[in-house]
Amino acid sequence: MIYWQLFKVFLYTNLIGYGGGPATIPLIEKEVVGKYHWMITEEFSNTLGLANALPGPIATKMAGYIGYEEAGVLGALISLLATIAPSVILMLLLLSLLNAHKDSPRVKRLTTFVLPAIALLMAQLALNFFHTSTISNGWLLTILGVSICYILLDVVKINAIYLIVAGLILGGLFLG
Image 1 (cartoon, helix red, strand yellow):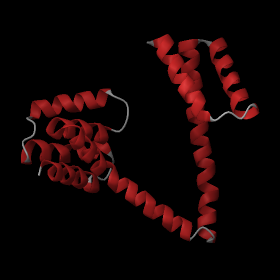
Image 2 (cartoon, one colour):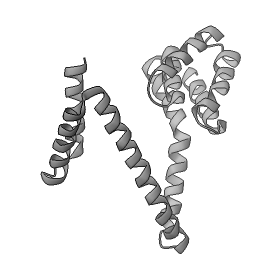
Image 3 (cartoon, rainbow, N blue to C red):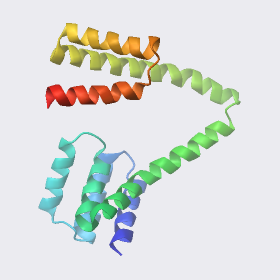
């Protein structure tokens, strides 16, 4: 019964919580504290504070923690599934709709406007990472790292996942 309740709570809050994670927090609190009494307000506040301190979407962190506390690993998995299911289903429906009309002049026009915007956002993100890296690692190490990554990706044609794993290992060794 607890698994169904967890699924129902997190599916409901994420279906009607328009506006992302922060919009779902009061809904989650109403269900978790008010309706099912899985937590008291103080515990919920502590969970919210912890979830805010960690990187990533707040709704999934809250769902995973509350699901785990109430029903172990399976409870966490069910809560996470219920949290991400609405977004995944809508994305799949929208992608299939977009794919069905990919030859439409309107869809092509939309793509010509969306792709440059995405490219600019990605460029801004890369510049922010570069700037952060120069502050924490210095110019020389940052330029050396970027150059090595560029050569490995573009010239040697190594798969990016290997660079990501290598970066995680190096970060763990030197920052840990």
